[in-house]
Image 1: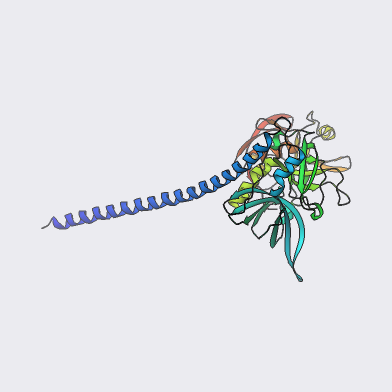
Image 2: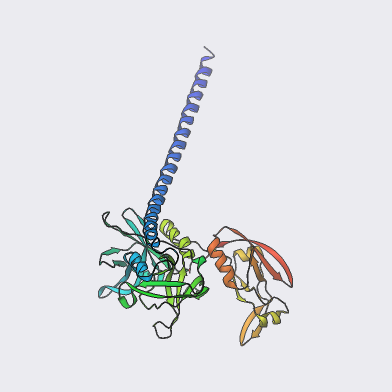
Length: 398
């Protein structure tokens, strides 16, 4: 009888261990099931997106087989894309009720079942309480679902459509393959003139334009196809009817077109828009420096032979640059009437790329890097070339 309590205790221990194992296994199964279900939903979303892109590509290929060598003519491009370009009305509330505050353009980027996603500009949808999306056939969708990135002036709008209505996304091309002089086409709604198409050429590549955020949009396409207020957010198409840019601004002193338009490159669109759809935000890589491009006068003032590169004038506090030990200017000089802090590090390379100006660095980061990635900067400090490792941060909110 003396051994009975011991055996009973052992029995209870065994039972407890078995129950504990069962709970752990059940918890593990639930976790795996939830993970599987989440991934299954993600795969369904990816499949729906791929199917819409395949359908759009099939339509494009059908047209291209008619004239493979020279691309499509303007009429083919228009007929192929016009039904995917929309008018975007920004509606706000005033003391007099709901009114239209501005009108821009957009285009169908993706279709997933009854959900369709429209790409446009951040400044087109900014502060909107309601958005009206009008297709060329007069069909109107009303929504408030939008997400945008002020740093690239890109935005995406989600609309819900009937299953029976077929909407084709436009095919996204590769802006990195564009060449100066290549023909491009813009479709939009200048002055609310629906479905207007204009034609021109790529005037230059790799431009940057300053925004209200204090940062510049980089990797911008300059073109001379006529665009005016209302074109913002519309597609810039190559000779195969593929989107290579999103019209974002014009160079003007009067408000009208003077021969220079700008479009955000499709390379940025392909990075920013999927993140806006899935996560409702896009995280930009951040170094945390301010500076100026080197030139002969600055090089002379610093007594250096490096007339190219990006001179760091200021390192921001609590930034990746500060953590990496980068150095800003230590004395001021007047160059052509402007006071410039000099004596800081000169960035002349990033990873395997030569940096001749700030845009080289920014385009490389925006096209290829994300917060948390490591880069290797080649710098000139006090006449000596050295390399500095830096882990990119996330750009602060504007």
